[in-house]
Amino acid sequence: MRERLQNLDPLSVVLWLLRAAILGAVLWGTVATILNNPYSAENWLDFLVFGVAQGSLYALIALGYTLVYGVLFMINFAHGEFFMSGIFTATVFVAIPLSETAFWDSHPVLSLLVVALVAMATSVGIAVLTERVAYRPLRHAPRLVPLITAIGASFFWQYFFRGLYGSGITAFPPVEMLKGSLIVGGLEILWTQVVVIVASVLLLIGLYIFVMRTKTGKAMRAVAEDKQVAALMGIDVDRVIVITFATGAALAGAAGLLYALLFRQVHFFMGFFPGIKAFTAAVLGGIGSVPGAALGGLFLGMFESIGPSLFLEGLGIPAAYQLKDVIAFTMLVLVLIVRPQGILGERLAEKKA
Image 1 (cartoon, rainbow, N blue to C red):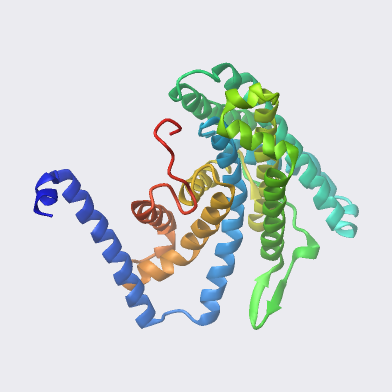
Image 2 (image 1 turned 90 degrees about the vertical axis):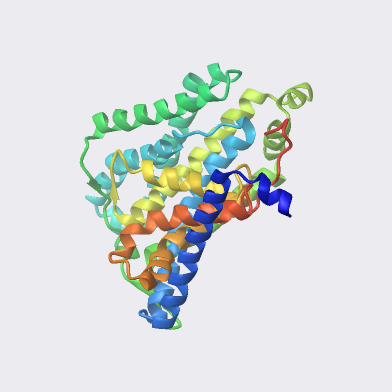
């Protein structure tokens, strides 16, 4: 024990002290908030429901990151723009024109399905085009090169759609059927939150079945394990990679519609912060793991919703909700200290990592 303490360098000691201080502050704030109890049980349930709804969106976007990383071991930082491009296009060309007709209110479910199809198709088209033009030529390049390319692609699509649709915020038309709330045991849940949560769960289940039970899903898992061996077994690796990009982008397009229903606005920059949060969720759950991405997104959404009120109110920090991003990333650090591979991630061998 004495030898281990002697071998510790000063930087490691400082880092461990900093981690202990952060953990101590979080615990102190939590205990103080519980003792003071500034919120009612209904308030806490509201925080929880909003956190689950927001976490469901993060989970859907995070799946795109984890699918691409699982197959290519590449972080696709342009994925947030796939999320933005679909719903922005669908809002401008479908949702707004439809909302000016009687069809929007008389057939709301069909109208939203049309918007969802256009959003998903646009996201898939942008993703496949990006993969073919920007990523495929760099398939065998050092990992840093595709990473920088992905960042460049992200900025390209941001400013492309800014020039195409303008830099202002576009309001997503309200859906009359989704106004109001559902009362469950005295808890009031907005209908938009119900739709977001239910749709996200169904999409997550559908993706899991697709990856684990279908022939294409088995091919994706084979390519993720070893591309060369998969090619020798007759699997078209390029086709599987395109399908992987398309699947993640389709989920991102669906998440874009759910985001618009929840927050009622779209703009060219809307994919940046949800994309960063979704990447964080993928790392938190275990990058490369489909269930891990879903679980990481759910946890991150709840951290953001409950964390400021639970951790910071007890410390007397004003405007605690504005620090929700700090809480989210702090919890990420604390989880990764205990489990560096993420909640459901696996420890990779050095050759594979």
